[in-house]
Image (cartoon, rainbow, N blue to C red):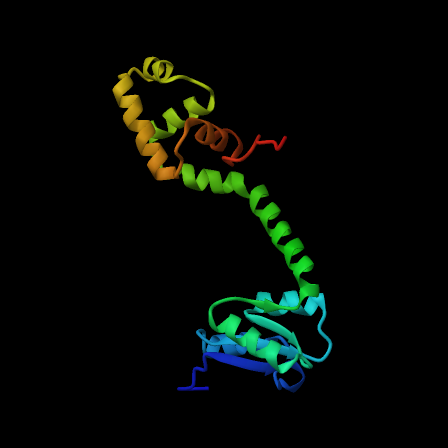
Length: 183
């Protein structure tokens, strides 16, 4: 594949010399911009998920109607992903599972994000997390109200928050959404 970098590659899993999904990884190493659409004789959820994780942008039954294959290729060419309808519920399960794992890991993420703050900003953020008002923060840290406001503005900018509640939830729980309940 040296010098050849196709935009889209239709890859029949039954014809791959490297053996199945290893071919996807090999193509991705040789030509990262190439978008791969896998064709298989017996599509299944496990293989479909594994194919997408390996870098494929499409996963289709080998007997796909030509007009549907054209649509799949156009979708992938435009940056989308193409899978059969039967795979969508499994993809949603995978996405939900990934989100849950990321949320469980968010305390570490919170520590990393809080590491962007100076020592004084971290003190202010932790006091906000404890429910302190600007006046209380100023008194405890022996600084002016104006300085507290300046620190809060900087903290919001550095952490990407726009209100005290989200900052407090983030400081306490590692997530600005923690504690929110749908009614």
